[in-house]
Amino acid sequence: MLPRDKIRAALTRGASGEKRSAAKNAPALVAFITAGYPEPSEFLNVLRAVAGAADAVEIGVPFSDPMADGVTIQRSSQHAIEHGVSLTWILDQLARRDFELTSPVLLMSYLNPLLAFGLEKLAARAAEVGVSGVIVPDLPYEESAPLRAALTGGESTLPPETSQYLAAVKAASQVPVCAGFGVRRPDQVATIARHADGVIVGSALVEVLERGEDPARFLRSLRG
Image (cartoon, rainbow, N blue to C red):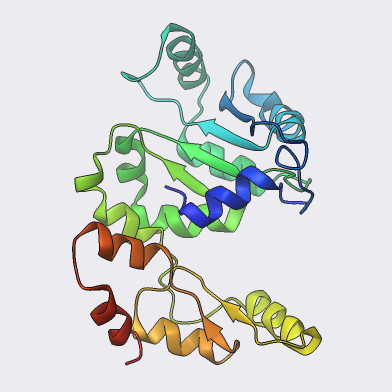
């Protein structure tokens, strides 16, 4: 699942920062490929070509019973499985790529492969190899809390490159700098506050409103 703010960013500019479809007043183009199809050895070449032409790329994780897909994708998924393609294989391939992704990349997978891999492990590994989000077609929203919790970036420390980036932005900026990284807890607010002038709360607040809870009470709770 990709937070709404990241979806907007993904559909208006690629990883290079260049505005694409939005600048041309055209709809965003999101491309789907089945990982390892038609040939596993060509996966990274296909990904590079597709990412260069699309605004975002969905990488389909092959599954033995793709009930939400048509015949074409079912066929490609079965072929990939027969040739050894799995979620682990996909993440390992992404880790060994020697090129920058010019568009955001999402994993599209049924739930079983994600559970078998481990949700916390998936979140860490996906971020490590450059995956921006996860789409799970057979996961009802009402049952998605464990996956959403694993993917909200709930770390109490910031990666060194993030804190360095914020320091550089603050040094160059003449106005206060605000930042947000999946903020939903007071310790996260405190961590980001050490590197920025303000903390942005987005997805977690939307979820509070979706549940019909008190947004003001939630915001006050973040101040510790």
